[in-house]
Picture 1 (cartoon, rainbow, N blue to C red):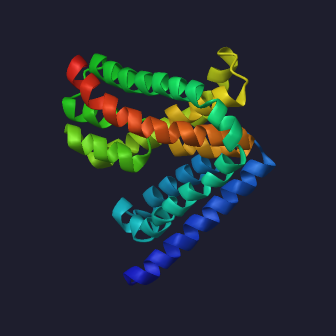
Picture 2 (cartoon, rainbow, N blue to C red):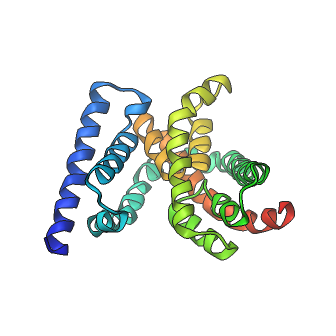
Length: 229
């Protein structure tokens, strides 16, 4: 099978799996049936079952990955819808995101150091709370491993989607602004997609928090790493 045909098959397979996960989520709406989680787990299991490598899967996966850019641009529409409210609440959003970014960096740094991880892994963990391209860039510049950083970003995103109901319930966090700041600054695009499904306002705030967090972590990560390492 040539690369073009294999890539086409993998793209179609990915779309079919995602649609199946979306159907399951709509039928059995639980946090662990979220399409991003269910489809990711299914694809990983299929790759392991049939012995496909990640590089082989990315023959088709890279074309889907290219669509992330337009998908992120599409998030600007709800931002426009709530632009007046978001302008008024910009300072609380900025403060909340800054706190979230600081906790995200320091928690990953201190916990991985306490666990005895090597510097290579620590530098790859530190930017886990921001979007994949930014995290990979931060990891590369600080001495981490880019693919490993991408894995930690996925773990942070999916982990945030799984545990955020419990965290928000115990924190008594019910306002869409607070939820959006938490999801965007801790779980980046995956958390933002979940917020967007639940409430357009929460999703809009999460989008802003995700963008701000990428900038803040890019500035904080090198300094905090030098301070605590």
